[in-house]
Image (cartoon, rainbow over all chains, first blue to last red; front, side, top):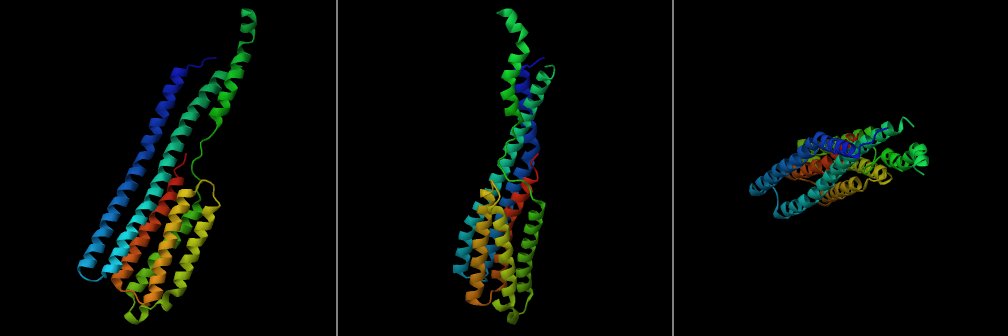
Length: 107
Length: 150
C-alpha cells in the first residue's frame, strides 16, 4: 500500500493544466467571435445612420441595446468559465480517487 | 502499544482514507446537464427569427405591414417562452435564464415597434435581425458549452 501525497498533488495539478489547455480554445474563440460580431454590427449601424437610412432616435436606441447584448455575451462567457472550472476540478478529483483506490486495494 | 498499532495499521489507514475516498468520489457540478433537444429548439427558433426579417426585407412595401407577420411574431415569442420555461426549472441555469430574458425583452420591443409604426424599413429590419442574431448566439453558445462537460 503506497500513497505518495506529493506525487498525487503533482498529478492533480497536471490534470488541471491539461483540462484547461483542452478547453481554453473554445473560450478564446467565443470571446473573439463576440468581439468581431460587435465590430461588424457597429460598422453597419453607423454606415446606415450616415447614409440617413436610420433615424437618430432608432440609431441611439440600438446603440443602447448593444449594452444588453454585451451583458448576454458575458453570461455566456460565465457559463464557459464554469464548464472550464468543473472539468478541471473533476479531472483533479479523478486522479485523487484513482490514487486512493490504488492505495486501499491491498486492504 | 507499537505491536497493536502495527496490527491495526491497515484499519487505521482505511479509516483515514475513507473520508478522502468520499471526497474524491464527489463530482463538481457548476452548470446544468447538456440537453441536445434544447439545442435543436434554440437553433430552430433562431432560424425562424432570421426568416421573419429576411421575408420582411424581401417583401414589397405593401407586404411589410405588421399584420403580415403577426403570426410569425407570435410563434417565435412562444418558442422563446418555451425555451425560457425549460431553463427556469433547470438547476444552476441562472446565466442561461438571464440571457434568454434579455433576448425576450428585446424581441418584444422589436415587435412593439413594428406594431406601433406598422411598417419597418429594410435598414431597420436588417438591424433588428442582426441584433437578434447577436442575442440568440449567447443562448446557443451556452447550450453548446454544456456539451463540453467531461
